[in-house]
Length: 383
Image (cartoon, rainbow, N blue to C red; front, side):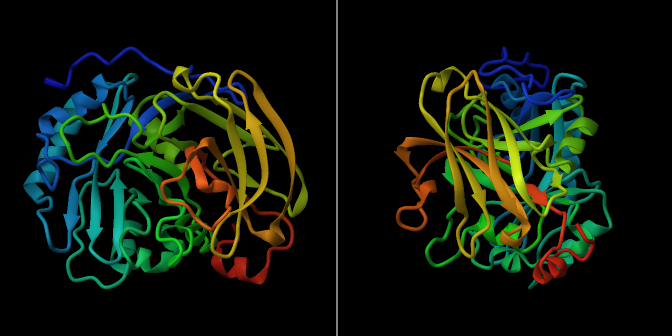
C-alpha cells in the first residue's frame, strides 16, 4: 500500500539537479498543490495522501478538498480540523512541507484553491466572485485560479479585483494531464490571455488534481517547481508570493530564467527595448537528447502571440534577446514544448503552441514608461 505512515522516507531525488545556473540563493523543490481525498469527492483515505506524495518524491504537498455550493459532498468544520491535524503530522521542516488548503468550488463561476488560512469558505448562494474576494481580503491566504475555463463563467471572465491581486498568485496552466492554454477554444479566448490581460499578476502552476489513491505517482500529470530559500511553509509561501515558480508535467524537470537579470515572476521596469533572456532548462533523463522548443509568448487579443522561438538543448544555458514594448502588452511568458508531439487541446490553426507543452515559466510584467490608459485602469495600484 502506498504511503503507510506520515513518516515514510522520501524517495531518492530523481531528474535534474536542484541548483539554478542563472540565479543564486534558492533551491528547486517539486510540489503538488491540488489534491483530493474521501473528505470530498476523492477516492483515497486522507491519512495516506501526504505519505504517498512524499514517497513519490514530492518535496511540497497540499490537500485541497472541495468547499462547495451544491452537487457533491464538501468539507465540513470537522473535516477541516482533520485535514489540519494530518497536515501538521506530515510536515518535516527542511525536507517536506505540507500545506492545508481547500478548493472553493462553484459550479458556474469556477474553482479556486486557497492555502494558508485558518478557516474555509463555501460557495453556496453566491452569484459573483465578490464574496470570495471579500473573505480572502480579510485573510493572509494565497489563492489560485483552477483549471481555468472548465466552468463556463471563468471567474466572472477574470474580472480584476485590486484588493486580492497580491493574493491571487497562480493560474493552473497544467491540470492533471491537460494543458489549459487553449481551453474552450474557439468559443472562448485563451484562459492565459484572458487572465493576464485582465490585469491579474498570476504565476503559472501545474497540478495533479488527484482524485484517486496514488497521489504523486502518476506520470505526465501537472506539477509545480518552486524556487525556495528553505523547504518550509514560510519558504514555500514566500516563493508563491514572489511568483518564483514554473509549471511542468515532466517529473524532475528544472526551469529557471531571467530577463535582463530579473527572475521570472518579477517586474521589468522598461517601456521599450531589447531584453536579454537567460534560460536554464534541464528536462531530466526522460527527455535527454530530445530537441525541444522555447517559445516567447506575448499578449494577443484572444490567443498569445509567439514572438520568438528557439531550439533548446539540455546542459546549456540559452541566451538570446527579444525586443519588448509595453505598448504591445505588459506581460511575457516562456513555454517549453516538444515539436514532435501535438497539443491535445489546440488553438488557432497553425499556431506555434499547437505542439505539446512541457513547461511554462511564470510571467514577467513590464512596468516602466508610458502605460496605455487601458492598462492603467486595470492596475489602479500603478503596478
